[in-house]
Length: 117
Image (cartoon, rainbow, N blue to C red; front, side, top):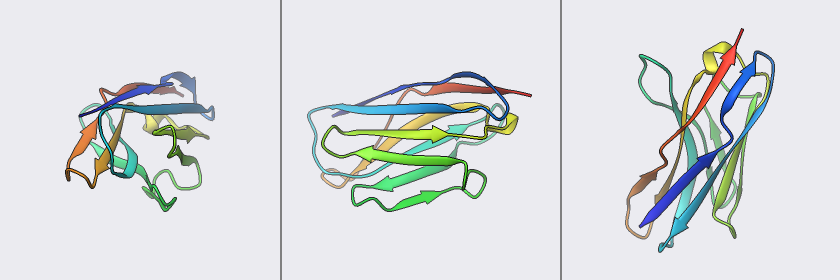
């Protein structure tokens, strides 16, 4: 089982920055993808960014050039740096991971990001 714990959310003005962190713990092996999704009020959850253990990244078009995902494979942690934040980035951000060892996805409980205009 994997437990994911997010941190780093908060309230920020438009144009500001935040850094979200996710730490995986428990008895597991075989992480192959780490990432972040978000869900804004009244909207469906959407992918924000992913990174593989090999370092390949993927971003939603809406955040390209503003957000950066990074990871520390040895520590089983990954971060999302959010720059040039916009009010439309307001959402609950969820970290997740996919394990090749059991073929399952695991999700954190979410951390709230609010961007004021």
